[in-house]
Amino acid sequence: MAPKLILASQSKTRKGLLEKLGVTFLSQPADVDETPLKNEAPLAYVKRIAISKAETIAATHPGCVILAADSPVILGRRILQTPQTEDEAKDMLKLQSGRRVAIPTVLVLVDSTGKLHHKTVNSWIKMKRLSASDINAYVDAGLWKHTAGGLKIELMENWIQTTHGSVSGIMGLPLYETEVLLARAGIQTNPFSKAEKAA
Image 1 (cartoon, rainbow, N blue to C red):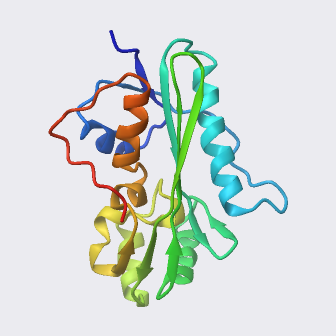
Image 2 (spheres, rainbow, N blue to C red):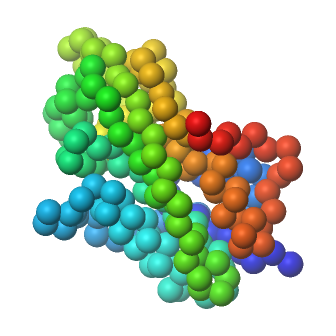
């Protein structure tokens, strides 16, 4: 019998992506402090937060398989977290306008024995130049909420000039790598699932 799978996230997008793999799972968000440490490199930050999410849920669910991920938006060495206000969302979108934006995803799995596995998937997008009316319409529609950098990628196809890497990873959960880690933990996915491999 396969162990119980818990997704350490309340993200509707991540839940929807995991459902595509045809697995049964519970969803429980991890309450962790996501404040970057002083002088912390962006990729080190992403890995630390993803591991913290997985270990937090694993601590109260022994014998379960815990899956966690973190996918911030990064410009140079600047981490764009989830905006808290409309003005902050507009500022973040202005920063990303016309620029290449890195969206690395660190995927972490704690198996039923407590062993930790992780995989980093590096992806990026090139945004078109956004007009003030583009940004205002997007923000007024509330699409910036609950997303790193204010980016709801699945609704922004007309704004993205170039995509590199895993599309599902950019959305928050790289399906190919998730499928591989779940198999190592004894959880079989739907054999007809369409998990794309990062280019």
